[in-house]
Image 1: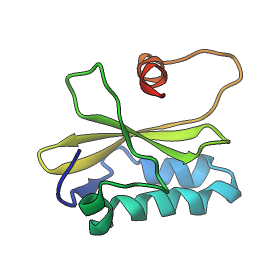
Image 2 (image 1 turned 120 degrees about the vertical axis):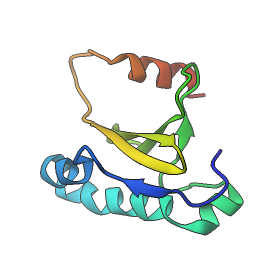
Image 3 (image 1 turned 90 degrees about the horizontal axis):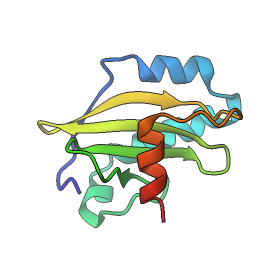
Length: 111
């Protein structure tokens, strides 16, 4: 896990996408998760109760998932690289059962 507070980088416009796509009830939860990712105390304690930050195992890249709200199935992916956390993708829950490879890897690692 990351030991110091990394800089949060949104070079793909994930925050803008979340503001457009998320239901009103989840927008505040999204911001709370982002705030926790910028809290030095979370990294010191290695405890992320709001975002439920989890490392995706099975990849060479340092990819993490963040649950916006576990019951809603909305989440986003982060990549840790060179001391920065890059917002990579906002994932909308789907009912059709189609999953990306990252979704399948994340499920395998979710205990």
